[in-house]
Length: 116
Image 1 (cartoon, rainbow, N blue to C red):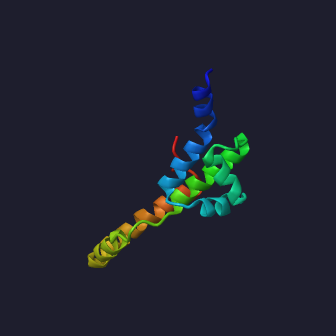
Image 2 (tube, rainbow, N blue to C red; image 1 turned 90 degrees about the vertical axis):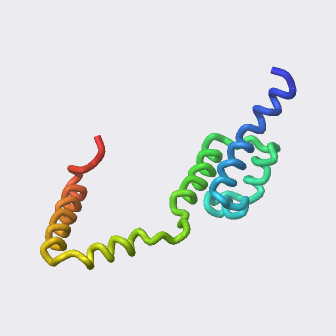
């Protein structure tokens, strides 16, 4: 393996982390706090001057993934629309909707509706 290829391989973890962090929209400091590692660790990995252990890289990428999942997007009116539709239903329609909802909740609570 030549020097260029070796250097590219050494920077793989840093590039992967930088891209994931950018996609999540977090700074190096925020990522360090989320993953509970020193900021210098994130900086050195992204600069390619430190090769992280698999455990450290996994911890950092998991923190980025968690941040992406809990990120709140711009407000949408989904719940408002559902509330308005529910309010416009007759009492019989609301009762039927509530029964279906409660039955589904019971299935989920019992584990019967888990994916196969």
